[in-house]
Image (cartoon, rainbow, N blue to C red; front, side, top):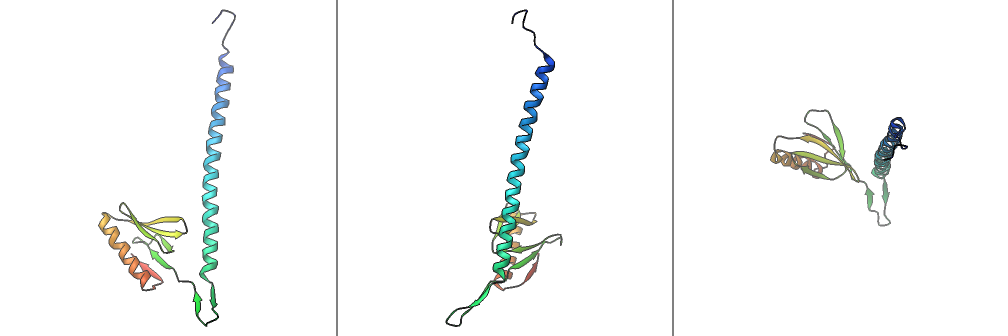
Length: 136
């Protein structure tokens, strides 16, 4: 660097602040866009599922077609009541309920994987028995 070239520290700091601000704004904007897309997707899926859940009609041969009633699952601590749309899975020690087409929510975590599997079996049996609600 020659003697004639001097670094303007304030200008350099301002430029770095501007670049950092832009990077943060871009990252936040991208995260919000992703989150909004997930929220909108779940809302649309829930609306479609709700409409289909009330669908009933009769075929030309007299067969009545109606949607299967979902089973509601109440968590052990009574803090969550989720509508199970048919899917159940154990993720580690947590029992996961399919609350929408591609929306999975944990209903409860257990001390062991085996206990989570037992709870899943309990919910499965309630669903097969067409129970409206099951308490864990």
